[in-house]
Length: 278
Image (cartoon, one colour):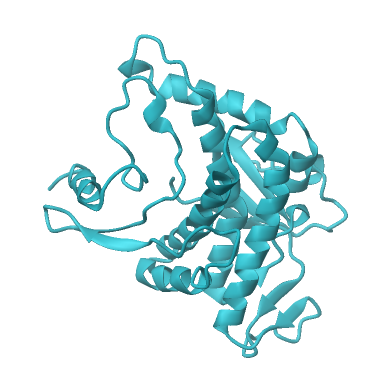
């Protein structure tokens, strides 16, 4: 996934319905409130239809007929939605040592041809360290150290994910472990994306080790972010997922993703070596 656009929305919390999220003059796609999406029983089914159309168009050149399996659209929507709270939380944790409220009523997103392209946050309650310049703000809650702040981030993501999975889980054929492995992946990846946004993936890897260190259930693993060196001597920051997007189930798809749980560490290095080789 490419880096997402991020916006802080200065609007009253009472205006949280989808139609009241601000529009953008640069695009026609509206902001979608997470609370609105979770309250609409058909929203995620419509999103999956859009994903199927997008993937069929993207991969039409590799097969005469591109039928997109249900598990592939289910995997894409699962992973894309979970990026919303994970990336927003990870971005502010990494850049400002703050954690905002990640409740669905505070977050929004927009889609471009089914793909997640932007995320938005309504200001409100936030957690910070004692030395934060805004620690005296009425919305600020001070915590003693970075470990405590990381625990707040972890639990905020878990709480939002639980709301989402209560709605989305019954619509798909993924077991509980697969669903929560996707949550773990999203939090780990969200922190890595945050680091890439600020040119500091090494610091992001340290953040992820801190946030995912305790093995808190229902998360399924510690951070898997690592640095690999390909055959050309180039280094890459990556991770090993515990869940799968099921892109490989499409006809004509031969090369797995570099972070795919189905490939070995050696194969992961080989895949990176084929990306724009020197």
